[in-house]
Amino acid sequence: MGLDALALQLLNGLSHATTLFLMASGLTLIFGVTRIVNFAHGSFFMLGALWSAHAVTQWYPAMADTAWGYGAVMLMGAAVAALLGALTEVLLLRRMRHAPQLYQLVATFGLTLALHDAMRWYFGPEEVFAPRFPGLKGAIALGESFFPTWQLFTLALGPLVWLGLHLLLTRTLWGQRVKAATQDREMLDALGVNPAPLMLGVVMLGCGLAGLAGALQLPREPAHLQMDMNVVVETFVVVVTGGLGSIGGAFAAAVLIGVIHALGLSFFPQATLVLVFLTMAVVLVWRPQGLAGSAAQLEPRESVPVFALWPVAGWGRALMVSVFVGLTLLAWGQGDYGRSLAEDVMVMMLFGLSLQWMMALGGLVSFGHAAFFALGAYGAALSHLHWGVGFLGALALGMALALAVALVFGALVVRSSGVYLAMLSLALAQVIWAGATQWVALTGGDNGLIGLRLVTQESRLVLDAVLCAFMLLALAGMARVVGSSRGAALQALRDAPLRASASGLPVQALRYQVFVGSATLAGLAGGLWAAFKGAVFPSVASVAMSVDALLVNLLGGVHQLWGSAVGSALLVWGGAELGQGMAYWRGVLGVVIMLVMVWAPSGVLGGVQVGLSRLWPPQGRSA
Image 1 (cartoon, one colour):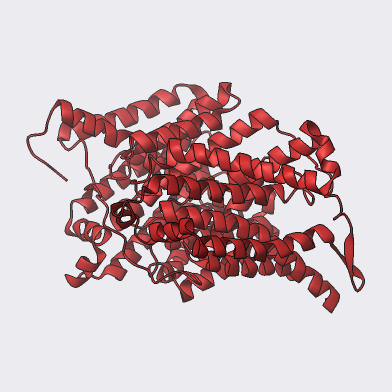
Image 2: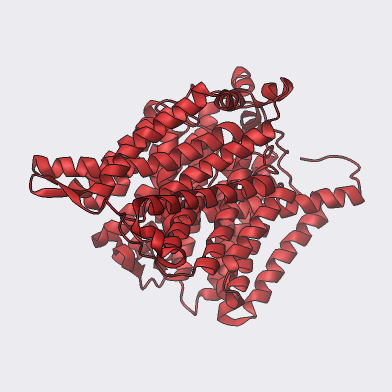
């Protein structure tokens, strides 16, 4: 590659860095003041793009003829995103302010689903191609190459936005109060400053920056309904790499990630995504708090409930098992559709239980647990297709592959915690997903691995019984661990790691064991998925699959033994039923998720337990 081509790619990377910085700075501002990680940030990006695109092509086409008019439309798109951000802060974020970060994250994921379907209904599903920006339609020569003038403008805009934010936060009273709220919101309230309007303003500014970033894409690409998820994951990478709460760190990380992304497209086009996430992983292993983040500090201890083996009485557990088996048999009687749905529920329950082990007992949160699910699925499928291994052997090899990767990866991630650990796990999942997509010779790429005959029509009844037994054994094993001294030690290090370490507990070793065990169980779930589906595709390693595991636990109840069973039934069965007769069922599911997170943060099963305890107060307490 010549110097001209290299300079062109560097300029492309810096131009892309402006988009990433606008997104990351808004997300950083919102997190710094509200302490909420807004997964729906990409939706405001998409809204700014879609609104501005329809404005210049359909509503106010004359404004696209002048630079001032086109620029005004872009600013109006940012303003629309800011107004929606204000509505979101009042109706959702304000109600989630004192909830644990994980519940906030899932609530904003539900908002993503709802806003996606709302925009699909209002704007339509088609792409919208906007005209070029007047006065900036040409290109500048770089030797034999040409660089678009519009991208040169956006490249220069990034540092200007950073300077503006820096001056706003350091030279104005509002900015000083924002910085004070970032450091100690309660103290600011005690000094007589009402934090509510401050938070509202910060959320509006952050969402407005996201809407502006979306509007700025119009002269270079069409507006469409996939823009939200395409940008939000990379934005999270920038924010975490730079350090949560640091605008300067977000700017440095945006430049770093933008340049690596652009150079990767030129030198390693098949591994661009892998390079981006590997960059984040290297930074976090070197500096667990990110490039410019402050040293990791323990947050105030949350009120975490004791893991509930509810119902405790022997008859209650027998009833739950009977209901579980009875519903499975009922689904079997509904034909192939019912059987397939019951299998999906049970596999998702096992996958959710593997993540529940990490979350409820170890206090570890993963955004990329699908990595081990995918390793189990591909390990089982490849061993069957290449070596002719049967059902149990394929499951064992899939689990072994997940275990091998977890043994190596776990040693790196257990030093991290919170969002940083979650993003490291997401990095692994994206690397696995990229490998499954691009290593066509081994995985089949997007065509997947098909033709698995691990489950035949003749053996399906027996293997369904085996699957059901796996679920019950996993539940029994978890119940046994919770009631043991090891379970007590795990919950101690989850709630008070410093006190647990001072008491002589091997904190890092216990965290490592929890991580590896959870990954191995996820590998088993992935192998079962491959066996019963008869095929494996890269989607098993996607972000959506990891989010499904989170939803299963949070809907049912993270701290409830049967929470993953109830959550998987709600998510898989409820989603299937809604999808049959409703065009916008994902939006409805998103609203349900938000309602559960706001009004029943302990999950459906936890809410039922609380309600019953109020009607019939227990005579004694049990773990």
